[in-house]
Length: 104
Image (tube, rainbow, N blue to C red):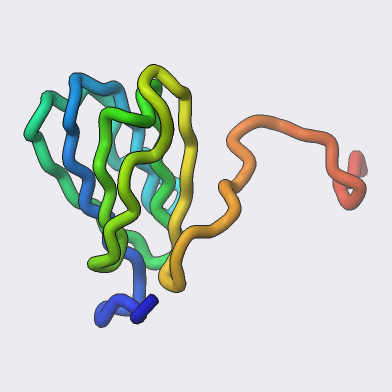
């Protein structure tokens, strides 16, 4: 995947159905709400763009010019993340036990 000329990640999302979506760029909520069929939006981040949706089939996604297709099935809750070099592991949005966690 060629790097974004600006040195980050640019995500373009087009709704194919009515769909709820939340987008986080570099850890900050950039958008949260409904998108209508045919509506397109784009976001950019330096480190990561995370997409959270309640209908994986309702969104077509392109990242840094590379089509990613739909995120999942109809009505499927999906969370996906991309960085400058392509898709990345989704940073944890909920507290999970980790061996390196320190309680102080």
